[in-house]
Length: 153
Image 1 (tube, rainbow, N blue to C red):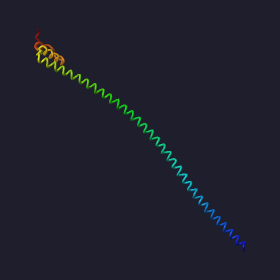
Image 2 (tube, rainbow, N blue to C red; image 1 turned 180 degrees about the horizontal axis):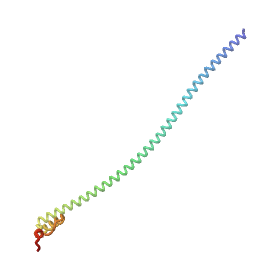
Image 3 (spheres, one colour; image 1 turned 45 degrees about the horizontal axis):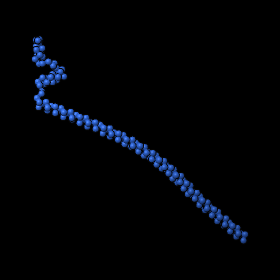
Image 4 (cartoon, helix red, strand yellow; image 1 turned 90 degrees about the horizontal axis):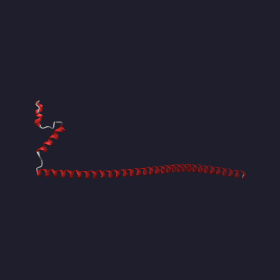
């Protein structure tokens, strides 16, 4: 009877041991799954970090390029402003010269009118030059009238 009881106890201990072994194996398996998921998560985060660092470097390069482009545009704008200022200065100088010429001519005309130096010959010469510019003969009107009738001098 003791032998049977000993065998039963042994069987019970063996069953308990196997039960404990299965329970431990299940826990190890569960922990292995958790560990595998953690490793996958770590790999995914590591890849994301790598991609983010690469993206940051790309953005930094793009910003540097944009700054370089901005500096070039600023240089070109300054050059254009200098050129524009020079043109304005030149136009102002020309305008001043032309204004002075106009004042001088006005003074000369005013002087001429007040002195009465305008002669009919001068007026005639000016009329003849106007006629020549238009393609008309510059001879006096009476000569032209005689030629048109066919009579000669």
